[in-house]
Length: 217
Ligand code: G6P
Ligand code: MG
Picture 1: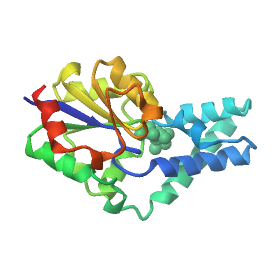
Picture 2: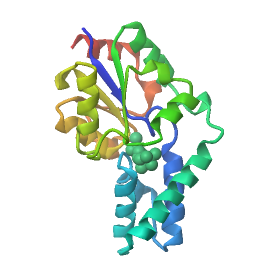
Picture 3: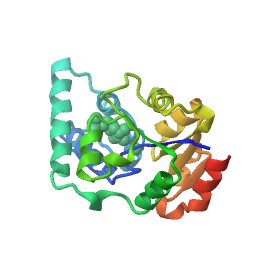
Picture 4: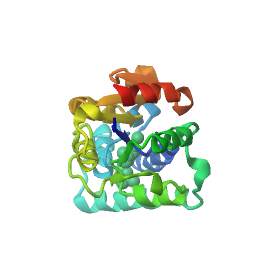
């Protein structure tokens, strides 16, 4: 049977979650807002605009649209500066064997990311061709935990929600998959991602038997 395997990007396929964090931290510092790792968990999977709003809420700061736009531009420029030399070494351990296995098994493979930088990242890391479908921050208007991004991906792969599997490192993303009645696979810490149906520390802990079982289910 052909299932839809939908991958989040940042923190799942590539190690970019740390760069988003660094870039947001710089903005927060500038504004005198304390922004910890824990706060950052709430930003994962969340759109750029919504992320800034969350940081401003944290610092109880009211800002003009003009200032917000300025910070959004600064954040993205800073973030992109970390990606200048990006190549396949940024792909997280264990990801490639799973992508290859899914291709071998002729399964549907989609990207479901809130990022507007998704395509250039897949190009730089040389894995764009693995994806049958790409749904990113340019295609959706509702941010995770709204399931819009995953619903679009499943639809484009002609798969039902029940036949869709979502790999996510963010709480918002796991919730989005659950809301859509898709199988959520959390990649990260159990304490953070406990709402996921399955949780793995990283892709090196996922073997092909697990994937095979999902395909047959
Ligand atoms: C992903 C990341 C978030 C990021 C969002 C928007 O969901 O987990 O940290 O803010 O995408 O990314 P962008 O590259 O468009 O700023
Ligand atoms: Mg992510």
